[in-house]
Amino acid sequence: MNAASILHPVLAVALAPLLPGAINRTKAFFAGRQGPPLLQAYFDLWKLFRKGATYSRTTTWIFRAGPIVNFACLLAALMVLPLGRVPAPLAFAGDFILLAYLLGLGRFFTVVAALDTGSSFEGMGASREVQFATLAEPALLVGLAALARQAQDLSLSAMYAGLSAAVWSQALPLLALVVAGFFVLYLSENCRMPVDDPNTHLELTMIHEVMVLDHGGVDFGFVQWAAALKLWVLGALVVGLFPPGATGYPLADLAAGLAGLLVLAIATGAVESCLARVRLLRVPQLLVGAGVLCALGLLLTFR
Image (cartoon, rainbow, N blue to C red; front, side, top):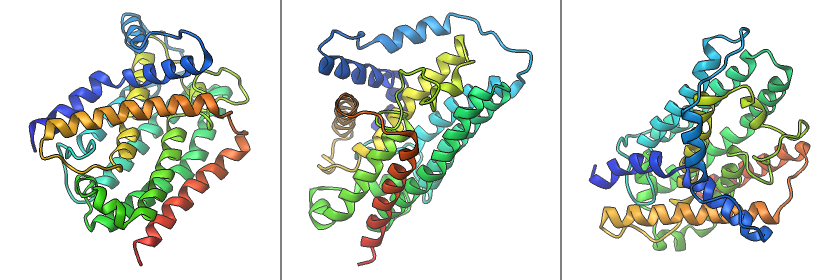
């Protein structure tokens, strides 16, 4: 463990709200308008954390725990997540399985918090979230298994530390398939276009946003902050796959990882500006396609 490893989770918590800001600024550029400030997410969080919260009499402690548990799961995920060639603060064999379970646990509490309201509207969003999760989570695990077999190691930090330009030249088809699959999962899990529109409030198309409609004040602040952290966590899985290899200077590697996340956010804004949202019935096909890409990558490791 080095200083950069410890610094990564701290920077993630502090800088994650910049990613939605970069995405929105890119979309504004493509639309030919000024758009919100880059720091708009910080202004929104400051406003939300200064407010109180109103709870329905029909809700229980589950509704209040949902945003906090999801946020805590993402904080724990940062402890086992490498950024580029910077190892995670806690690296051990099988930590990629823990990462998948932490993301699943956060999703579970978000879903049950939505169901706890007793609203059929939020129940609809929760059912969609679970349906798509049954396709996205296996694809993520298969993709990570492909990386583990390629690296001959079960630790996320070791998987990503060994990726370099030389490895890419030797395993180009495998890594290209995993990158494509992970990018689809990154868009899907963060409810971005073409899977979902995070700015919509149309009942027929909402997935994630409908589950958090009853949250307000501090609770909604944690929801928004957790959404930014999830962008960071899944974005780090995509960015870390690209060369170059480690420079030998951990702080330089950390800076390269941060730059990669910013580039990915800009690319996300470009994708959302150029693509329309697919029909809801087509989303499972898109996720199955991501799973097939990751599975093909795993099969290539047996050559």
